[in-house]
Length: 132
Image (cartoon, rainbow, N blue to C red; front, top):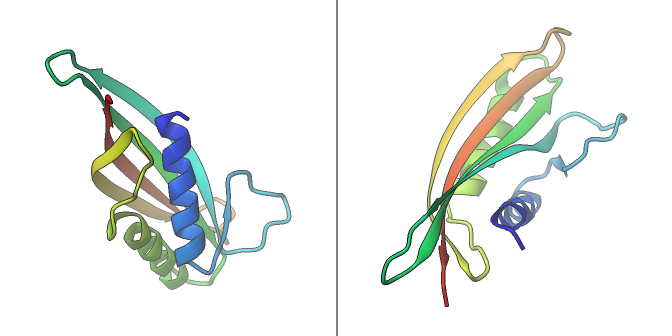
């Protein structure tokens, strides 16, 4: 499995087990608010060749949170819960991957429809692939 697939799998499982909000890889048209959507990924590989060959992956991934609560409290609370679920306890990846560290940032805003609140949570995961 690729590092992108493994990271998505462990994040999905962590969120599913930590939050009481629907989580989607593909959001159905009739999804009830609030919900979380796993979004875009970007992968950069830093390969080295020395006595201990390994690859370092820099994975930028996005998680979207949507709410129609009248106010920003719900979206802020869910965004904080997502952040805590992902970074408070390091994600465990299967061999040959090992998560080194994660960087987080976010933005919260009102969508153009003036009803939907949207949080964009961006994670940068630095993952080592260790050769056996």
